[in-house]
Structures are given as structure tokens and as C-alpha cells.
Amino acid sequence: MMILLEIFIICSIISSAMLYLNFILYKKMASNREKMSPFECGFDPLNSSRIPFSTKFYLISVMFLIFDIEISILIPIIPSLNLSNPSSKMINIITIIIIILMWGLLTEWKEGSLKWIK
Image (cartoon, rainbow, N blue to C red; front, side, top):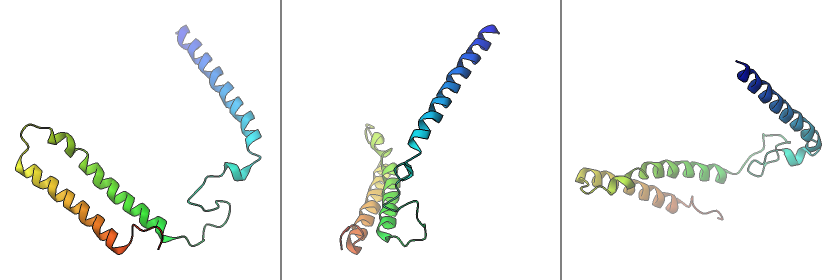
């Protein structure tokens, strides 16, 4: 029981010292508010947030999410291909997933969503 009390006291002292050190250092850094503010896609976070923004950022983020989810579907398929006897059903499923992925990529390419400069 005495050992637990000693550990508790030591941990309390260390955490208090770290909090105090953080408080001292933060006062020195708080003077530059612009430098400490987060950077959000080129917007100034200290101004009004009701400014119109470019839809390119939105479209690129949606495309990233779609392709990211498709990649997370494809990654578990890779170890299953190392099996000595892959079934035709599994190969058909892999082919369908890749066709859907390529179809989406070609559709976005044709409509010009992948071009940054128009």
C-alpha cells in the first residue's frame, strides 16, 4: 500500500511540473495569434466564415473519399490471391470491383473533374 502511495505522489509531482511548464511556455507563444491559428485550405480563420469557396476543393475531397474507400476494399483482396486455388467466384468479384473503379475514373476524367486548371 505504501508503494502505491509513493507512485501516486511521484506521478502527481511529475504531472504538476509538466502542467506548470506548459503554462509558462504558452504565455510566451500566445503573443502571436496569427501564427498559432490553424491553417484551413487557404482561408483566414480569424475572418468571417461566410465567404464563398471554390468547389474544386469539395470535388477533390469527395473523389478522394470515394477512391479511398474503394482502395480499402481492394487491399484485403491481395492476400487472398496468394491462395493456391482461387475460385472463379472470387475472380469474378475482383474483376467487377476493378471494372467499377475504372469506370468511375474514366467518367471523372471525361467530365473534367480531374483537371486542376481549366
